[in-house]
Image 1 (cartoon, rainbow, N blue to C red):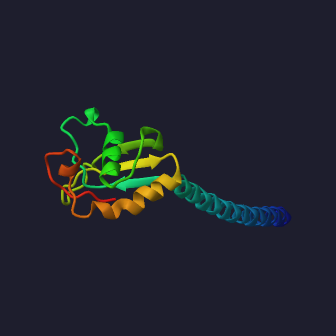
Image 2 (image 1 turned 60 degrees about the vertical axis):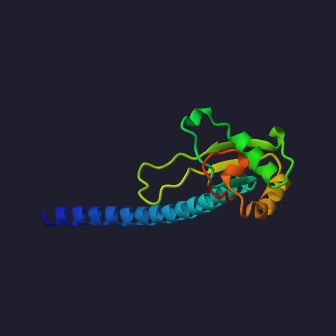
Image 3 (image 1 turned 180 degrees about the vertical axis):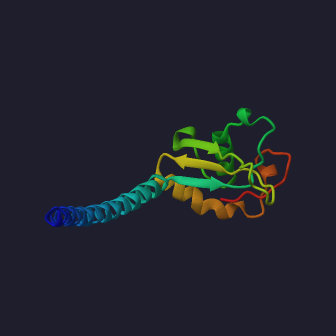
Length: 151
């Protein structure tokens, strides 16, 4: 009987050593995977930033009563014209108005317009010309309401 207990104790100690070794390996693997995941996350963020290099935000343009009727490309073209930049539809990859969050309880402002240009040099030209908007309002691009436009 005593020998049986010793034998079972030896078996349990061997199992415990196996489990400790396995746990060590699993911890090491988890640490390695967390490190790789962090690197992948950083690369993903870099790629997202890189994909936005041709994008700009336009603030202060009133949203029409029927948002579906709005052509944001036309708004971008009118703002460009106001700044003295000769833009065409072919210079714009895509433009859209961001949705207003229902959770937002602060000062009510118009949802901004995001524009992605086809070429970065056109985006830079548009961005540098933003100083031309100083003192101008949305009335200058054909809106009844007068608000300042910001890029």
